[in-house]
Amino acid sequence: MFTAKDFPKVPTGLKPQIPDDIETLIHRQVRKTGVDKNFSFERQHPIAMADLPSKKYSITFSGITPNSHGRMHRHTYHAISIITKGKGYVFVEGKKLEWEAGDIFEVPVWSWHQLHNPYDEAVEYITFENAPELLNTGIALREERS
Image (cartoon, rainbow, N blue to C red; front, side, top):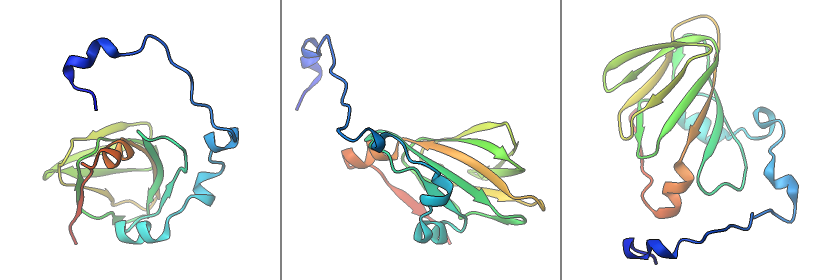
């Protein structure tokens, strides 16, 4: 295990870690093949997760059906969402933040938040998170409210 005093030991070069099977670097048709039914049910909206070898980042395609919302939850990992379709809002620690297609927003770490779609059009969005990084270091937490 390295500590701060080991900073001079940082290598000056890298060897790319290319997998034997290059196809593991792509997850084709994520919205069709990556849907996690149990997690989608738990979160109360559809979620399709990309199956990639990254140990640092995850990416999901998600949606909120018309006139509904996801569950109130919070987590220790960073989350940045890109709205690709529709409009709605997110409550972050009780404060309302409205968004629409083309917007990008970030949810602060460990803040209670819940996405809402009060309109008749479905919402679709992509979320980037550093959940794998925190899972691999043993500090990832997620808490859900009913």
